[in-house]
Length: 90
Image (cartoon, rainbow, N blue to C red; front, side, top):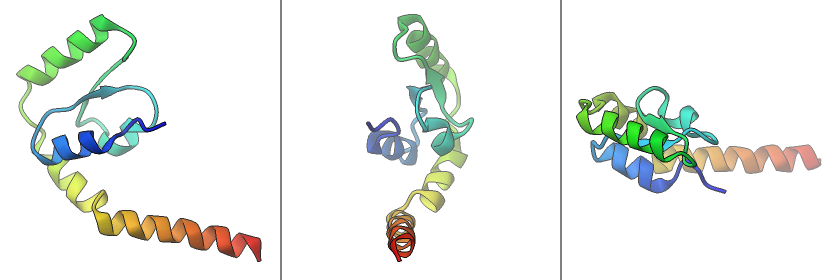
């Protein structure tokens, strides 16, 4: 299951306000720089979209994504996870 999604990271990097699910790990990625909704509630989705549409863009979100979620950081985290697994097997 993927909740964060590459499309949300790309949209945030492009300077868009994000409306995303309040389920899963999205808050760990976007903190208070996104508009959260319950994906099972039309009213919640509508409210979040309207808020995002009228709100100024969070410029800090672009910096957060660039510094934390780039390919180098992702590769390093993946390698660290593999090394932890390998060392646990010894």
